[in-house]
Image (cartoon, rainbow, N blue to C red; front, side, top):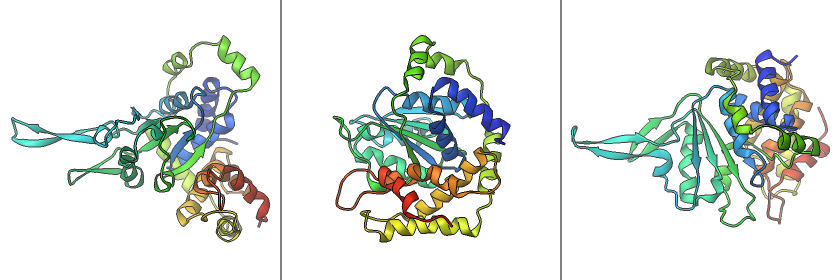
Length: 304
C-alpha cells in the first residue's frame, strides 16, 4: 500500500494536472531518488505549472529562472559587488540558491549560460571568482525545454542532459481532462490555495527510505543486462554509462517505494526505464532522442 504522505501528494497534484497521474508519479520518483528532472514538451501543456505545483506540495523554497538568449552565467549563479564600507567584494547569491529551482525554457539560453547549471547539479555547489559556495539541502533542478525544432532553441549538450536523472513529456490532455480545464478555475489560483503535503524532513525521510528499498541480485543482473544491451546491440550511437545504471536503480527503488513495496521488481525498472534512458540514448547513425528505442529494451532483454 502506498505511503499516506505520497498518496496525499499524488492526489493533490492530480487535481491540478489532470489526467497525468503516471507523469506525476515519475516526477515524485525522480525527486525521491534525489535526481534532477527535465520536462520536454510543446509550450502550453503545463510544464511550468507542474514545477510550481511540486514546489508547493513538497514545501520547498522555490526560485524560477527564465532562460533567454542573452542570459549570462552570473544571472544564475550570482555576482560579487564591491562594498565600500568593508572595502571588499561581497558575493550576492543568484536565483540558483534555492531548494527547488525551475530552469524555465532552459534550451533558449546559449550553451555558456546552460553550463552554469552543470556544477550546481552535479556537486550541489557553485564556484564564482575562485570561491566555492554551497547550495541548499535538498537541492533540485526542474528544467523545462521546448522541442529542438522550434525557433530560438539551443540543444542541450550530452554532458548537461546526463545530469538529469529523468526526462518526461506531458503531452496533450485527453478530451475529458481538457473539458475540466476549460470549465474549472485557474490552475495558478488552485496552486496558491494548496497547503504542503510534505515537509523538508518528510522528504528526507522518504529519500532515505527509497535508497533502502531492497534490490535482489537477480534484479541487478537485469539492470546490467539492459545496460549491456545498449552497448553491444549496435542500435545506439553509444551505450548507457555507469551513471545511467545507477540512475536506473535509484529511480526503480523510488518507484517501488511509491507503490508501497520494500523490494524492487522488474516491473519497476520497466516503468522508469524510458524516462531514465530516453534522453541518454541516440539511435546509431541517426539524430534525435532514443525514448522509443529505450522502450524496445524491455522487449529485447529477458527478465531474470
